Length: 442
Image (cartoon, rainbow, N blue to C red; front, side):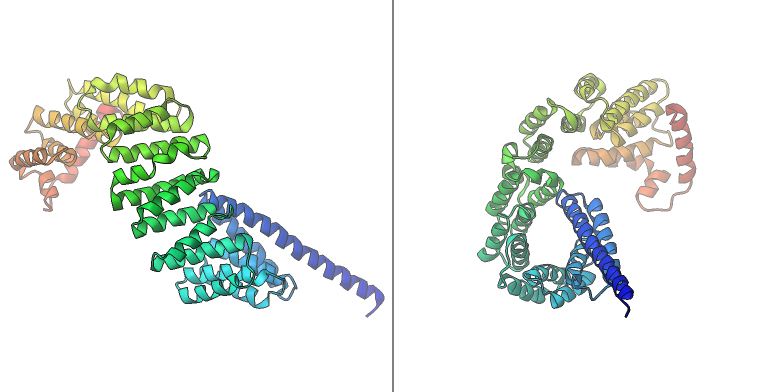
């Protein structure tokens, strides 16, 4: 080869080497961005970025599969595939990365993620073997915390042993996986019926400043705790929400989650007190608190007399789409109720607003009955009675409504409710739709 040719070949080799390194560097940064999205609960954004990492690293690997940096590229490719939900492809890439790893300390790190892929595929014995090898091979830092988190989770799925819990507790001491470890401890504590460990896991999460971003997940786990032990116990588990280290917006939403648990536990005084304190603030949590307080009032309201108080409660949060929608529904309800004095179908329209837009079942029942009682021979009277039955608050009321419906055994609505093929139902429904539209303008 000529000297010129050698120089050209060297330049090309250097160019490809730089391109390979740049791809690895840029993809690693993109992967870390995706990790931040994942840890904050922004799953869609995270998956989109993981897939971009997969695309970039897979293209680079195919272009030069024998490059000396290929094991690191495969390691990144496999991690991104794992996070994006493709455990099978991840296992293949990580297995090849582990086989070819020569960089000191790389193989045990790869084995942790390979074990995670194997666990997702249900191959738990292989996952255990991979984890043990990795942890005996000088694993440190974040990779060790990930290994403990995975090993503890695998073992706790089978049995609640102290050593498995210890792995999760140890994993939680590393800031990189502390929140994930806390969530996993809470999930498994609820599944195993261990209230004390659930309380400890919640306290650890409340002490993690960034855990507020995972509040939706925590609330779901608290709902599971409520189903298992009852809402009163779940509320006691979350009593420390006020003392969290979370940013203020998340602390406000946490207080509302606690208020909902208290309300479900029949502690309406405590629930309203907590929600009222959040409502006195500003921002999204305050608006949400006002909506929650309004919904509790609407659940039991029987007449329109509470309208001014509801407006006074909601007006400070005007501008929030949900508040604006609720205020609009209140306006429509009052307008349709007034129309009912001249056109009784206005009461039917008011009842539908109370039921569908305000979540006020008792009020809806009253308007449906008002319509049915105005003219019992009206073809839509049985429809109104059936609608009242659907929102009736207690068994005696439902029994009374069923007795009233016995007078309408031939109605297409009653026949449909009892499973018989109704004749003329579609025509009745279309006529009702047109008449309601004429009244409401909707």
